[in-house]
Structures are given as C-alpha cells and as structure tokens.
Length: 193
Image (cartoon, rainbow, N blue to C red; front, top):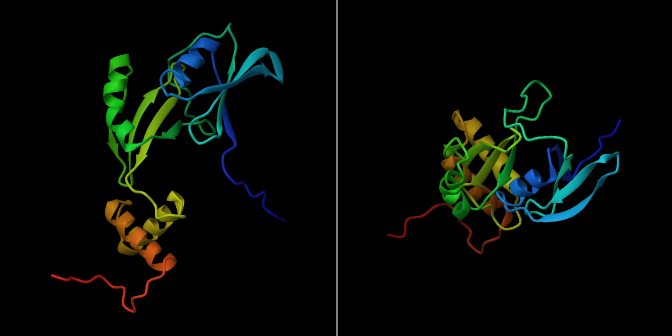
C-alpha cells in the first residue's frame, strides 16, 4: 500500500450566491484578482469564478443568480469547514481593524496566537474568514512549516503550553546552525562586551 503524496493545495471551491456578491467580496474586500470565469462544467446552471489569493493557487466560487446571500454562520458540524485562513503582511494586518470597521464588517479584533496574529470575520454567506500574519520569517530556503515543527519540538521538550515567540527564535537559530556553514570552530552564543 502506498500514499497518494500531495504537494500543496491546488484550489478550494466554495458554494456562492450570485456572481456580483462573490466578486465584491473576494476581489473588492480581500483584493484577490478575478482571473477566470466560465460555466460550472458539472452544472451548466451555475457560474464558476476563479480568484488568485496571492500565491498563484486558486479560490473558486460556484455562483447562481437565484441564490441570495445568507449571512448566518455556516455549519460547523463534523466534516464541515470551520474557516478559511489567508496570509497577510504585517502592514496589512495592522490595518485590518480599521479597514473592516470602515465597511461595517463585524470582526473578532486581533488575536494573539503565539506564532501568528489573527483576526476573524464572516463573508457575506456566513463563512468564517481568518486573516493571519506570521510573527517570524523563516531562514532562506526554509518553509514556515519547517520552523513550526522545530518550534513544536522545543515547546514539548520544555513542557510549555503553546508555541510562542521564544520557541520560534530558538528554532530559527537551530535551523541556521544546522543548515549554514561557518568558519568558526565554536558557534555558541558569546558576549563580546
């Protein structure tokens, strides 16, 4: 028996309401360029809109002019999607409250997640959206996930409750020590003062 090894998210498709609500939210609020539009090939009564969330992958929306937006929270039963999280820069995250407030969009306010900052709000169809901003930059050639797994190991070894910035900083230091060469024989912390 062998795995079917995945290599990333290809796209996420959401059941939308009308076409304009989708365009206004995904491009007009979240800034995702509207890049592709065609019929839903499995249901000719629906449209299929494609948006670029910023990494070249896709968020797609099935639309139907007969469906109206319903802002009630989408189901969170077992097997349902709880929320979608999108990466934003630190600069954008710092503007999120003001920019949501100017549109009258209710939100959670900033949430401290230790390794990232988050803010939550609903789309016009009740789907919970998270804007997330990492509190660290991984070393060159290393993914956020690689730093996170190292920070997790450090946190567990220390018996700490959750990953926080000290674990991230120590993980980055360990990764750099392993992956980057130095002419020094001794690479331990030093105090030149």
